[in-house]
Image (cartoon, rainbow, N blue to C red):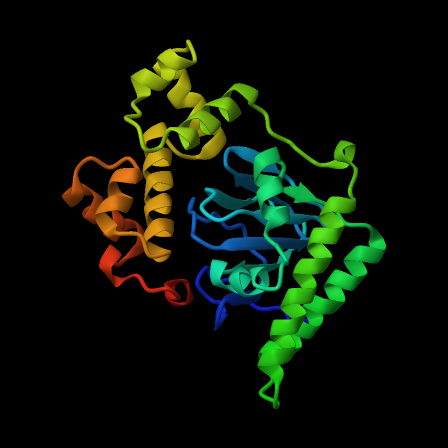
Length: 288
């Protein structure tokens, strides 16, 4: 595969999904973010730390990370001993809608990884060989302009999702990799996610878990890279984005996401996504 210099927004767009093969030779620090689409992170080489919903993973070559839509995550490179290389796929929900119509739910592995709080897995050697071969086909069709290249790339993307789901569910429970360091913090994050539409304050959360709010702030920042307030705001905005993207009324999405002031919601939304809620369209993910 051809290696390309890493730039955060350098992704070629196809309808419903995006693909890129990243190669970077210097340490990077990507800001924490979330988005309304699914992400597949396929690690090839290097030395990185990937944080998803407060869980920290250190992938080895051949490991795959599955990131459900609206999950907060960020990537850090550690002191480099080798250049870092990976393949990333972004998939809009509309990609899966077509598959649902024929009775296939290929989002299952993403949901299960999210519910387990275990986003990293390693396929067998035979499985990873099949997966890489499909990736090569997708990359080749992305780069040429021959008749039918879009069809081959699309069908290969579907094949990749089937292979990933099969590989994910073939792995025994005991071999799932989970390197989370703070079980209490995991419970706090789960609590926040379950109560986003309610009034959440630092004092209230600290009282709920019988800990100091100062200790809570310190631990939250250390393991997620965000303050509790920043995390709550990102999750509320992601929920609102997801609802509006799928046709919900903007005011309804605002209130259901936990915002009590509509004007503040509009300002925060514009800061986070660079556009107003009214500008969202069904395929707005393609423009990000």
